[in-house]
Image (cartoon, rainbow, N blue to C red; front, side):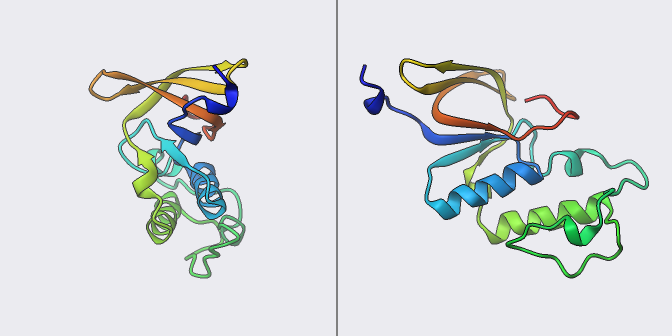
Length: 149
C-alpha cells in the first residue's frame, strides 16, 4: 500500500489528558491538525485529578504553572493546591472545547509503528474490556512517571 494513502483514524493521538496532554491538544487544535486524546480514566487531569491527599500542592510557583496562552492571575497562593490546579485545567478544557476530542476510559495497551506505511497501530482497552484499534500518523505520549498509558 502506498504510505501516502494509508488510512488513518487521526493525524495525531495524544496519550494522557493531564497538563501536558491538554497543552498539546490545544496546540494541535490551533494548527488545524486532526487529533484525539486517549485518557485511561473517567475525567481530565492526570496527576491533579488523581492525587488528592491532604496538602497536595505544586512545587512550582503558581504563576509559572499556567499555560502561556491562558495565564491565571487568580491563584490563591504561591504554590497552588492540587484541587485548584485541577479546577484551572478543567476551565481551560472547557474554554478551548477540548473535551469533545477526548476518549475517556481508553487505555493504550500496545503501540506498534509500521515503518513501511509510516503509521502507528494502537490497541486501546476500554473500561468494558473491549479492545479497539486506531491508526495514527503520530503518537504523543503525555504520561508521567506516576502513570502508565
